[in-house]
Image 1 (spheres, rainbow, N blue to C red):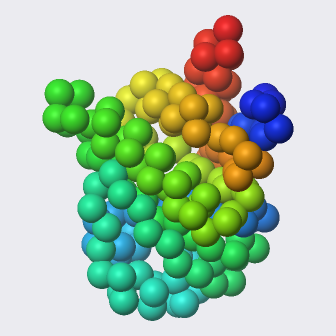
Image 2 (cartoon, one colour):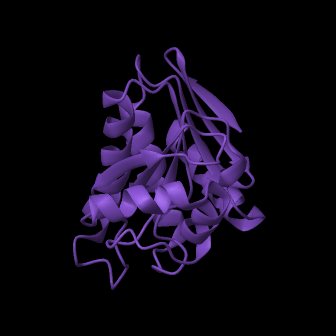
Image 3 (cartoon, rainbow, N blue to C red):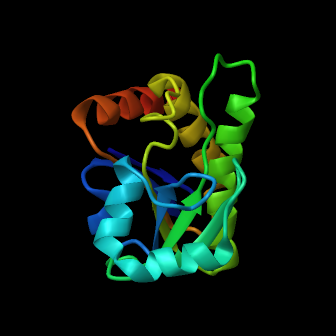
Length: 175
């Protein structure tokens, strides 16, 4: 599913983010940039040791912020590592931190002059963020940001359930 926003495209696909050919892919990282499970582990495995070498030099990333490294062996030239919030109960600033994780990633892509970026669903796996709420925040943030510099924002969603929820939320946002 995709929509046009001015001259840019917001796209939803089901797939493997490590195979993306966008200028950058976004990694749902942990604050230590230490690799891990889920999408984080998959990106590090597919991208090779160069990504971890740069992560070690950077040292860490606060929740809601983003840093950038090489894409290593990936088709994407860069990996933007962002740290989403661990969902507690929705009253610990989780929504603002999740929005900030997406926005920081988008701004970093723009500052680097990138034209396309692919996101996973941040914080909805091990960090426990409710999927429909997270999808709404992700899509709303991307729709508000996308413009002249970023021509493509793609959400690469690992399974059918996540893809379906993102599609439903996008349909609700565009009305």
